[in-house]
Length: 98
Image 1 (spheres, rainbow, N blue to C red):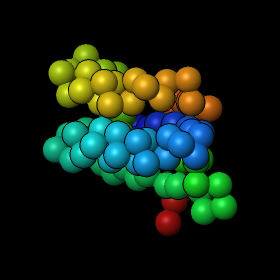
Image 2: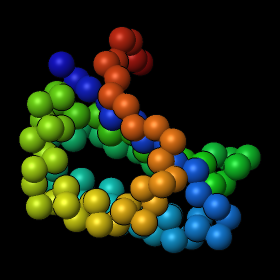
Image 3: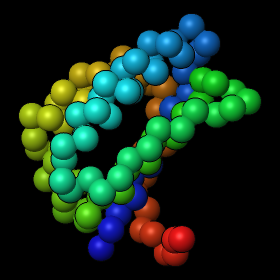
Image 4: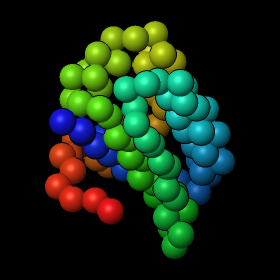
């Protein structure tokens, strides 16, 4: 069953450029990961320090397996400075899509 992993972050105006760079580099690591069907990074238009990161995994097990990989540790290194800026980290099941 496909699982959607969602992160929401809020960073200060002084952190925006640093976060943009870090999250972009972190997500590029997923470009070759076959278990991730799709990901997106969205920045709030009205409040540029707010972000949503959405990853579609082939299954919850696939996401869990990925957390044991060297690539996952690289991602953690990029986002570690923003750990306290995490507003949400949840898993969702897609009910309907177009």
